[in-house]
Image 1 (cartoon, one colour):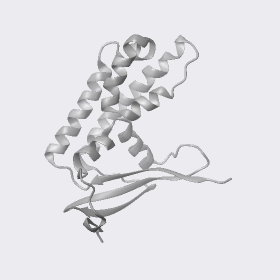
Image 2 (tube, rainbow, N blue to C red):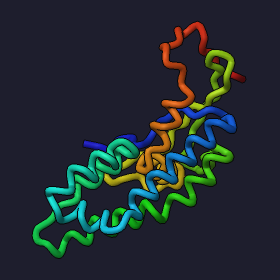
Image 3 (tube, helix red, strand yellow):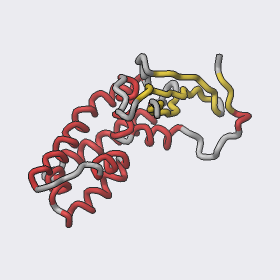
Length: 176
């Protein structure tokens, strides 16, 4: 038994268009608005009847947030504070993710990236992670990509920027 490499990998354009930036910021506004809805955090944690409604709305914005939320375990009603804390953490990271939209840079010691041209547009393939014995990597690159994934930004960037038709390998070349 030994350590394994744990990390995030994603493909991000070197530069986002103004339209893409606007759509990504709108996505964050929608997520923030949902979480700030009166009683959202309390109802999603306690009320089974309203939980489905809130979960569906959250799933549309951030599938990973729903997954992370479902991994929280409860033993009694007092543990519902874990939900409230989880959503407060999301609200706390939204301002940082807004900064990322403007420059799309992930600079950290645990980041490796390559630039590729795909159908005439430059993309950066980014990997952030480290060797681990089962614990989550603590590097800032990994934590940044995780933060972007939790708020649904990585999926939204992919949806907006990756060509819908799978490009042939002939269209992809490494920029040197």
